[in-house]
Image (tube, rainbow, N blue to C red; front, side, top):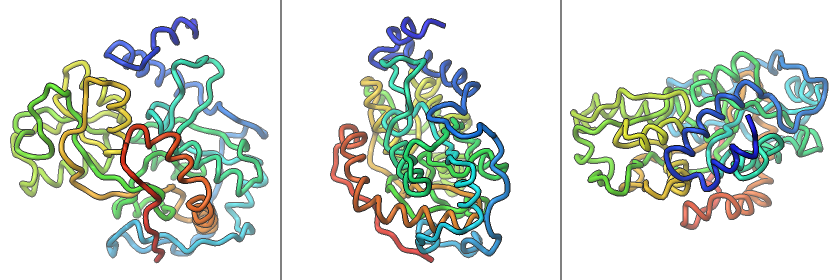
Length: 335
């Protein structure tokens, strides 16, 4: 593949053709990663994680999942953190095709381009605090439906990938305190008669990412009657960006996803727009192994500092141009 020829074809990020190429490149890069900003001995195994000591409140007792994380600590003597320090790098699961969150600029050299975006900035900040070097990091591109498995089987130390904190997910992984507030929203063509998450979705085909909170919400709302009965929610994809491609190809009528992601996708393609207001309130967190209590507490301490110095600068650079409304770090409580 000639990188410069592909780059020229992608310039602008608009239209079906460009997005289809991006989708193809996603598959290629998934085979290449781990790759960017890698250093150390190159080992792929992460190994066991920390101290097994009841990291978070049981999911069956869960309310307000964003408030269930552990109090922050600057202690770096825990088992999980020591393994990371011995390895010399932090292994982080990320997205590489979510515009302004975790992506590769298609107008740069695809052979040397680095990941960038709001989530990527946070991952670098965590590496900088734990290892004293923001570049001591290895990124692994993982699809939406592989975020939890990647943590459980030790492929990554953590996932920083627009991942909503939920009670169901707390059964499988631990989360940091929240670093971003968002909500589910409808994305559809500007010419569509869809008005939002309402009766205008009748007889419409809706796409969501498999295992996403958007999919879980649609299933629950279909059962409860909150979502119009004739809405077709059977289309699910491994990666959320795949829904945008299907929307552009006319295979679905709408996409339901986090409004923060949808706003960035609308910026990629001027033919689509957000419809209606957010119909849920959700919070992104850094996901980690349930047994890695020391790492959870240390990441929460990083977030304490990052909210004071780093969060707003990153938001202004990456998200303010697309979200277009005032924002700040969400309020934080600990269990």
